[in-house]
Length: 193
Image 1 (cartoon, rainbow, N blue to C red):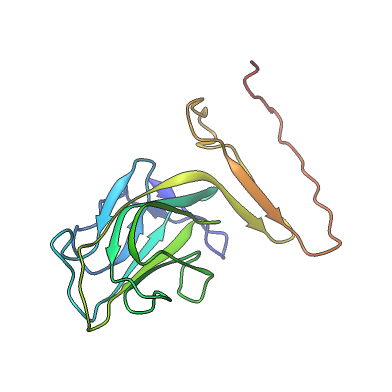
Image 2 (image 1 turned 180 degrees about the vertical axis):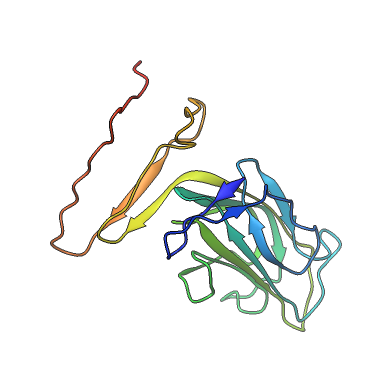
Protein backbone atom coordinates (compact mmCIF):
# COMPACT_ATOMS: atom_id res chain seq x y z
CA UNK A 1 0.00 0.00 0.00
CA UNK A 2 1.04 3.59 -0.61
CA UNK A 3 0.71 6.50 1.80
CA UNK A 4 0.61 10.25 1.35
CA UNK A 5 0.73 12.87 4.07
CA UNK A 6 -2.09 15.37 3.76
CA UNK A 7 -2.26 18.88 5.21
CA UNK A 8 -3.81 17.68 8.45
CA UNK A 9 -0.85 15.45 9.21
CA UNK A 10 -2.88 12.26 8.84
CA UNK A 11 -1.51 9.58 6.57
CA UNK A 12 -4.28 7.90 4.57
CA UNK A 13 -3.48 4.57 2.93
CA UNK A 14 -4.10 4.16 -0.78
CA UNK A 15 -4.56 0.77 -2.45
CA UNK A 16 -1.84 -0.62 -4.69
CA UNK A 17 -1.86 1.27 -7.99
CA UNK A 18 -4.04 0.12 -10.85
CA UNK A 19 -3.10 1.05 -14.38
CA UNK A 20 -5.09 3.77 -16.10
CA UNK A 21 -7.94 2.55 -18.25
CA UNK A 22 -6.26 2.95 -21.61
CA UNK A 23 -7.93 5.30 -24.04
CA UNK A 24 -10.22 6.87 -21.44
CA UNK A 25 -10.59 10.65 -21.42
CA UNK A 26 -9.12 11.21 -17.97
CA UNK A 27 -9.38 9.55 -14.55
CA UNK A 28 -10.37 10.80 -11.11
CA UNK A 29 -7.23 9.60 -9.32
CA UNK A 30 -4.21 7.63 -10.43
CA UNK A 31 -1.75 6.33 -7.86
CA UNK A 32 1.78 6.34 -9.28
CA UNK A 33 3.77 3.27 -8.27
CA UNK A 34 7.44 2.39 -8.58
CA UNK A 35 7.05 0.66 -11.96
CA UNK A 36 6.53 2.45 -15.27
CA UNK A 37 2.84 2.34 -16.22
CA UNK A 38 1.38 3.49 -19.54
CA UNK A 39 -1.34 5.95 -20.36
CA UNK A 40 -2.53 7.05 -23.78
CA UNK A 41 -4.81 9.66 -25.23
CA UNK A 42 -8.26 8.52 -26.37
CA UNK A 43 -8.06 6.85 -29.79
CA UNK A 44 -4.26 6.50 -29.83
CA UNK A 45 -2.73 5.64 -32.33
CA UNK A 46 -5.75 5.86 -34.65
CA UNK A 47 -6.64 9.44 -33.76
CA UNK A 48 -8.40 11.40 -31.04
CA UNK A 49 -11.76 13.17 -31.29
CA UNK A 50 -12.30 16.90 -31.58
CA UNK A 51 -13.36 19.05 -28.61
CA UNK A 52 -11.82 16.97 -25.80
CA UNK A 53 -10.81 18.17 -22.37
CA UNK A 54 -9.29 15.18 -20.58
CA UNK A 55 -7.83 15.44 -17.06
CA UNK A 56 -5.79 12.77 -15.27
CA UNK A 57 -5.08 13.39 -11.58
CA UNK A 58 -1.94 11.69 -10.19
CA UNK A 59 -0.79 11.18 -6.61
CA UNK A 60 2.16 9.33 -5.13
CA UNK A 61 3.69 8.69 -1.73
CA UNK A 62 5.30 11.03 0.77
CA UNK A 63 8.93 11.87 -0.10
CA UNK A 64 8.37 11.05 -3.75
CA UNK A 65 7.57 12.87 -6.95
CA UNK A 66 6.22 11.77 -10.32
CA UNK A 67 8.19 11.31 -13.51
CA UNK A 68 6.36 11.36 -16.86
CA UNK A 69 7.88 10.23 -20.12
CA UNK A 70 5.79 11.19 -23.15
CA UNK A 71 7.24 8.60 -25.51
CA UNK A 72 5.22 9.78 -28.51
CA UNK A 73 3.39 13.07 -29.03
CA UNK A 74 1.55 13.56 -32.31
CA UNK A 75 -0.95 16.41 -31.93
CA UNK A 76 -1.95 19.39 -34.05
CA UNK A 77 0.92 21.84 -34.53
CA UNK A 78 0.40 25.59 -34.29
CA UNK A 79 2.77 28.41 -33.39
CA UNK A 80 1.72 28.77 -29.73
CA UNK A 81 0.30 25.28 -29.03
CA UNK A 82 -3.21 26.56 -28.23
CA UNK A 83 -5.21 24.45 -30.71
CA UNK A 84 -4.45 21.01 -29.25
CA UNK A 85 -2.20 20.79 -26.21
CA UNK A 86 -0.90 18.72 -23.31
CA UNK A 87 -0.18 20.45 -20.01
CA UNK A 88 1.30 18.94 -16.87
CA UNK A 89 0.44 20.80 -13.66
CA UNK A 90 2.91 20.47 -10.80
CA UNK A 91 0.39 19.95 -8.01
CA UNK A 92 -3.12 18.67 -7.30
CA UNK A 93 -5.04 21.27 -9.35
CA UNK A 94 -4.83 23.27 -12.56
CA UNK A 95 -4.05 26.34 -10.43
CA UNK A 96 -0.51 24.97 -9.92
CA UNK A 97 2.49 25.77 -12.12
CA UNK A 98 2.11 24.27 -15.58
CA UNK A 99 4.44 22.81 -18.18
CA UNK A 100 3.16 23.09 -21.76
CA UNK A 101 4.46 20.16 -23.80
CA UNK A 102 5.50 20.57 -27.44
CA UNK A 103 2.73 20.43 -30.00
CA UNK A 104 3.20 18.74 -33.35
CA UNK A 105 5.48 15.70 -33.22
CA UNK A 106 7.89 15.01 -30.36
CA UNK A 107 9.45 11.98 -28.72
CA UNK A 108 10.62 11.20 -25.19
CA UNK A 109 9.56 14.44 -23.52
CA UNK A 110 10.04 14.10 -19.76
CA UNK A 111 8.44 16.09 -16.95
CA UNK A 112 9.27 15.67 -13.25
CA UNK A 113 7.03 17.05 -10.53
CA UNK A 114 8.42 18.72 -7.43
CA UNK A 115 5.99 16.91 -5.15
CA UNK A 116 3.54 14.06 -4.82
CA UNK A 117 0.71 15.44 -7.02
CA UNK A 118 0.16 16.23 -10.69
CA UNK A 119 -2.61 16.86 -13.20
CA UNK A 120 -2.27 16.12 -16.92
CA UNK A 121 -4.64 18.05 -19.21
CA UNK A 122 -5.16 17.05 -22.85
CA UNK A 123 -7.21 19.58 -24.87
CA UNK A 124 -8.32 19.36 -28.50
CA UNK A 125 -10.11 21.94 -30.61
CA UNK A 126 -12.68 21.41 -33.38
CA UNK A 127 -10.38 21.79 -36.40
CA UNK A 128 -8.02 18.83 -36.75
CA UNK A 129 -7.14 15.46 -35.23
CA UNK A 130 -3.92 13.43 -35.05
CA UNK A 131 -2.85 10.16 -33.39
CA UNK A 132 -2.43 11.72 -29.90
CA UNK A 133 0.11 10.63 -27.29
CA UNK A 134 1.56 7.62 -25.53
CA UNK A 135 3.16 8.23 -22.14
CA UNK A 136 4.48 6.42 -19.10
CA UNK A 137 4.55 7.50 -15.47
CA UNK A 138 6.07 6.32 -12.19
CA UNK A 139 7.03 7.64 -8.80
CA UNK A 140 10.62 8.62 -8.15
CA UNK A 141 12.54 9.50 -5.03
CA UNK A 142 12.83 13.16 -4.08
CA UNK A 143 10.87 16.36 -4.28
CA UNK A 144 10.57 19.82 -2.79
CA UNK A 145 10.10 20.48 0.93
CA UNK A 146 8.59 23.85 1.88
CA UNK A 147 7.76 25.40 5.21
CA UNK A 148 9.38 26.03 8.56
CA UNK A 149 9.71 22.33 9.48
CA UNK A 150 9.68 19.12 7.55
CA UNK A 151 10.90 15.57 7.36
CA UNK A 152 13.11 13.93 4.77
CA UNK A 153 13.72 10.23 4.77
CA UNK A 154 15.49 7.77 2.54
CA UNK A 155 13.58 5.91 -0.12
CA UNK A 156 11.48 3.06 1.31
CA UNK A 157 12.33 4.00 4.93
CA UNK A 158 12.30 2.23 7.40
CA UNK A 159 13.06 -0.65 5.04
CA UNK A 160 16.56 -0.78 3.55
CA UNK A 161 16.95 1.19 0.35
CA UNK A 162 17.87 -0.58 -2.87
CA UNK A 163 21.33 0.44 -4.08
CA UNK A 164 20.08 0.29 -7.68
CA UNK A 165 17.32 2.88 -7.04
CA UNK A 166 17.48 6.32 -8.59
CA UNK A 167 19.49 9.03 -6.90
CA UNK A 168 17.22 11.00 -4.57
CA UNK A 169 17.20 14.77 -4.88
CA UNK A 170 15.40 16.95 -2.37
CA UNK A 171 15.11 20.71 -2.63
CA UNK A 172 14.48 22.62 0.59
CA UNK A 173 12.77 25.97 -0.02
CA UNK A 174 12.98 28.54 2.76
CA UNK A 175 11.84 32.11 3.18
CA UNK A 176 14.58 34.73 2.60
CA UNK A 177 16.87 35.07 5.62
CA UNK A 178 15.87 31.70 7.11
CA UNK A 179 18.62 29.15 7.70
CA UNK A 180 18.08 25.39 7.49
CA UNK A 181 19.20 23.12 10.30
CA UNK A 182 19.36 19.41 9.53
CA UNK A 183 19.19 16.91 12.39
CA UNK A 184 19.92 13.30 11.50
CA UNK A 185 18.06 10.70 13.52
CA UNK A 186 20.01 8.04 15.30
CA UNK A 187 20.91 5.44 14.26
CA UNK A 188 22.05 6.92 11.00
CA UNK A 189 23.67 4.60 8.54
CA UNK A 190 24.65 4.51 4.90
CA UNK A 191 26.61 2.01 2.88
CA UNK A 192 30.25 2.94 2.38
CA UNK A 193 32.11 2.17 -0.82
